[in-house]
Image (cartoon, rainbow, N blue to C red; front, side, top):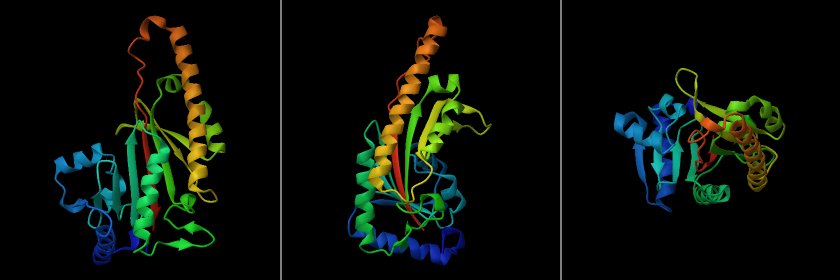
Length: 239
């Protein structure tokens, strides 16, 4: 069953199966969500590994950390989520991380896989590869000139540009997340290349809008627009 159908006993069995597979390939640290202190939760949030899904399933969810870039999330929105997060590096490196862990774990775990549909997840739109690419971007130009204008263009390619919102539904710091909204029917390599092409388009829009912003108000532009390294993230999920 998917995570929503797991009872505590079955959740523990899933965790133990994953740990047994991990033992053969990696050194790691494991934390259970139900036992975390506030300080440990803050650390997880800083490492981009904490999510609402983990919190909602805290009675059976765990985070298995390999190093500061790679981790396995157990019983998040799927039973197994492999994550790689890297700042200022390329998306291929993240994908290689995920593929390596996936290939190693699949030697000992029976992944939910269909010959026709590929990897099966609780999110039908990412069935196939089960891959979600995400790039965290600082886009003050696009925000000031209307990011909604380019949403339809990105949507036609199967991608979305999602603002970061705070608890009061206000946008935070000109931060956006560029992510794929579908995966089925495409290979991991195709999605990675398409993401790079989409990123180039988004950067071109940002440069255009930054120039317009500069021309419109040259006296106030100093320090308002700063270059921030992109944060690349790749996740593979399996139900």
